[in-house]
Length: 121
Length: 108
Image 1 (cartoon, rainbow over the protein chains, first blue to last red):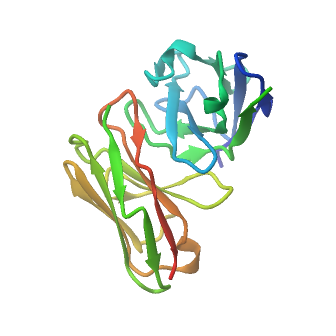
Image 2 (cartoon, chains in turn orange, brown):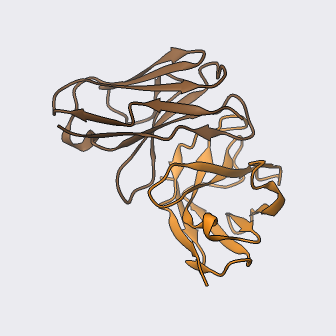
C-alpha cells in the first residue's frame, strides 16, 4: 500500500524559507506515469494546489506561487521536496503531499496525512 | 484561471436521505473533474474522477455526473460516516489545478 509522509519544521519565521519533504513508501517515486504534488490548506479554509513534479525533474507550478517556489525530487531516497521562500502569515497552512495518476491527471489519489506549518516570529 | 464554485455552502441532511451537491466551473472542464471528501483533521479522500468514475473502494452510494461547466455529486442514502466537507477540483485547464470552496454536509 502506497504511503506518503510529510516532514519538516512546524514553525517558520516571516521572510524565511519553508522547506518540507515527502517520503514515499510502498512504491517507487520513479514509477511511470505517476507525478507527485503538493497541496496546502490554510486553517479553516479550502485547498490550493502548489505544484507537481515528475521523477525526471519536470515541474509544474501554481503561477501565484511560482516566483517563490522550488520543488525537487531525490529518486535515491524516494522523496520529493518543497521550498517556498519569503514566507508570510498567509503561507500558514496544512501542507499535503500526494500522488497524481499521471501527467495532466491533476487529481490526487493518494495523500499524506498533512503537516501544519505556522509562519510566525 | 478556472474558478470553481460550489453550492450550497452548507447542507443539512438526515441519515438515510439523499444529498445533492453542485459544482460549477467558470469555463468548460470537459469532465476533468474530481470530488473529494474531507473529515476534520484528515487529508481529503478521492471519491470521483473523470466526473463520474468512482475511485477504488468508494461505495456505490456516491455518484458523479455532469458535463461542460456543471457537475453534481449525489450521495444516495447518507450514512453517519458521510458527514464531512466535499470539494470539487478541475484538472482540465492548468496550471493551476483549482478547487471549489467546499460544501459542508452536516446532520439535520
